Amino acid sequence: MIECTQEGDLWTVTINRPDKANSLTHAMLTQLAEIMETAHSARVVLLTGTGRVFSAGADLDEARAGLATSDVWERLSSAVAALPGLSIAALNGTLAGGAMGMALACDMRIAVPGAKFFYPVMKLGFLPQPSDPGRMAALIGPARAKLILMGGQKITSDEALSYGLIDRVVAPDDLMSHARELAADTLAAKPEIAAGIKALCSGKTP
Image 1 (cartoon, helix red, strand yellow):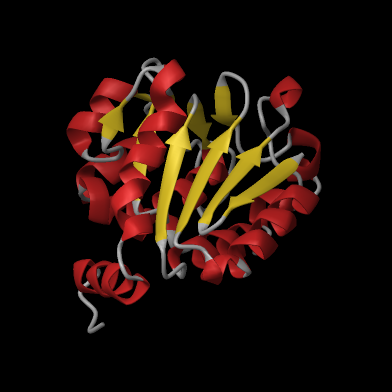
Image 2 (image 1 turned 180 degrees about the horizontal axis):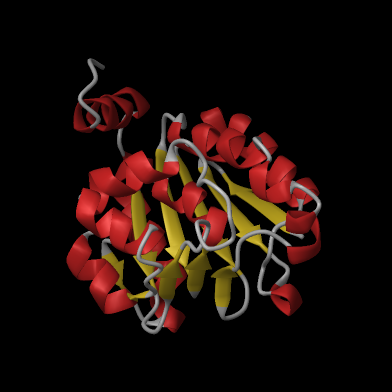
């Protein structure tokens, strides 16, 4: 249910459980984390899904059994954030719940029109994963982060673009080709230069 294809220095990681809205089990999250932890040789990682939803978040049965509070979500988002290369979330549809963490940890997010973004963790009686609110607030500001996390609002792709939660809205048929276009310069650059720019953009010394 998690597919990883490698074309040289470009890795494409795909969530493939469209019959369940790409909801995530513990095994799927562990596999995603393991892939990201071994992707340090990749120059670019593209993260996407199949079907009309990027991910509905936790599998409901497993969420009730404890997945909602598992540290595997934080393991995954931390692994994405630690990638030295460029990471792009190509969001093929709605992004919900804890699945937002891995997208927030990416360097860029592009999404299709009609995608919605929501994180109803408070209503379900749980805290978000520790790094998610900070990453969200860094992108869209504390008030808008609270709008989503505490106000329970579903944000449209147009709103997400205006907030800075996503970087572009792209037609579904063009989503992956546009992600590859965004990756092209990084793939062509010297690895140390691309990694240095990423570090500088994060306020770090390369």
